[in-house]
Image (cartoon, helix red, strand yellow):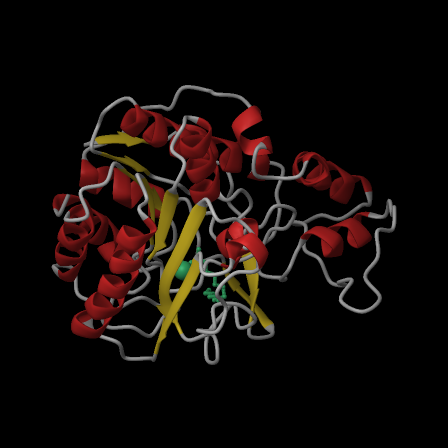
Length: 334
Ligand code: SP5
Ligand code: ZN
């Protein structure tokens, strides 16, 4: 299987994140990618396909903000990484504001995801890796893997958060649509619900979004991913949420994934994007499921049995020492 990764993806390295009211080490660190690369035997550098396929998913003003915000933060005299602290939840309307703190709150949905001067280069490289894997599959490969880091599934068309800036799964799915696949599915098996991916395709009938994740009643991102969220308008029925409780092991996870795969088959998708997170692993430091390393090969075989051309993009997974083995196990099942 071809694998893609750009060295630019190592450059985003925030010092700290706000976690439960205190600053702790940033969990989504560059070493994650290094560990995966070592375990899968390296990766090819993606071709640069430019901003157009990113603009097909994200708003132009948001992309400009991601590129400009770190310099504006520094110009305001701030020494560290950029973090928001005020959000337009009440009385939201399209104001044109210039102060960096107003912009940070406008484009962030949480305060866990610092921006640095290198963030754009890394997020851009992550998107190019997703596009390279997608195009490898469009050109005839059965599957391809994009080592996306930073991850993407919490980022919406005009917002960042949850360690995500550009929604690499959505960019991949849209690229498959634009290449002629009329019905595309995204299977999201990261521990967390992919709120950004869901929002991007919420009202669309051409991209099916199915997610197996920790119940948002107990877990981040809380406000999305409940079982009654099924899409709206033309998109009604094209979103499927399968929340699971703390302690979930392979059998229950596999059964939920089977429901998602069955729905994807009934949707008659001709192209599949998998958002793969290894944060469902039993030893993950920020999660509470109990999958084992060999379980990922079983899940992958079930996905492969759909028989669809499949682009796999990396999402979360924070147990650094086990991350390489978990990803290698998953890829071995295809
Ligand atoms: C892509 C993905 O898996 N994003 C997960 C975002 C979860 N953010 C909320 C939990 C924050 C936990 N912070 C742990 C800090 C350890 N130093
Ligand atoms: Zn996650």
